Image 1 (spheres, rainbow, N blue to C red):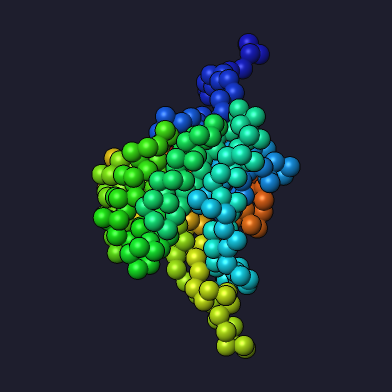
Image 2 (image 1 turned 45 degrees about the vertical axis):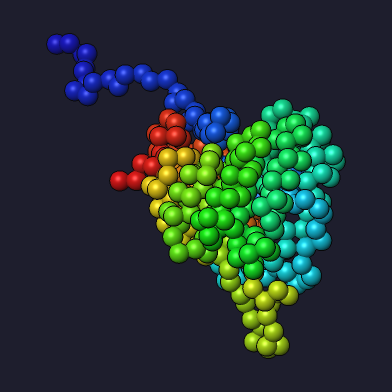
Amino acid sequence: MSTTTSSSTPAKPHRGPQPKPDLRVSLCGILFKNPIIAASGTFGYGVEFEDVVALEKLGGFVVKGLSREPMPGNPPPRLFETAAGMLNSIGLQNIGARAFVQDKLPHLRKRKDIVVIANVFGYTREDYREVTQILNDGEGIAAYELNVSCPNTKAGGITFGSDPVMLQEVVTACKSISRRPIIVKLSPNVTSIPVMAKAAEEAGADAISLVNTFVAMAINAETRKPRISTVTGGLSGPAIKPIALRMVYEAARAVHIPVIGMGGISTAVDIVEYLLAGAAVTQVGTLNFWDPCATEKLVEALESWCFEHNIGRVTDLVGDLR
């Protein structure tokens, strides 16, 4: 009798190690290593984070808003931590577009492995146009992001981002002279996000990003005074994520240009949700105040999530809501 035994279970074929997920995303002709960008107003001018974050690991970052002239910002108190987020009224404090081109950009330009996006704002259409013109002369900028949540001083304080006609005027003005792609950062404080998204697209925007902060306030019951000096400010953080996610979904279905999603992102799963809603890439903002290394950690977390879920290319997630 033979002593040889056999198993009824066939041997599994040998498979090599699973390749790393491809996190690369192409948007407006720009190649991002991954879909994680540090949002404007939360990452300084980038150079301030060099010692704590490996900038080359990020998809990119957006520098804080740049105006025609330097601005000191609002008086304190101008930050207040809420139950699920943050209220801020910094007042768009910045060194001005010219100083950025002269003092900050040369250092950033030495880094060939990073993507720098410049945030632009103003109080008149001419302001936006002039800032764009100043930045045109600076090398090393990949794109411009127009902050249209600013009040138009010539129109009685109505924000550019709340009126389709004014929005189109400022986008057209910048697009006509821009040497780089134009991203329009939409305000959530509107009746219809699809209307504003389409207005930006029709005016020539190369992409849109949303959402900016929600107008909100906080009160100190003991002193009976507002928590911040300007009474109201912008609410950001996890509290706004469900609303922001819905708006990104609506905007992505309304336009044919890329959408950048943001609002309350704190985990890799949050990023995946925005991608499924239709965002091509995402921006991370308030989380940077809690953890300056957050963006770099999220890149690693997203790669792990994709690996665990057998996602070969992160772009396969975009708009794949079922």
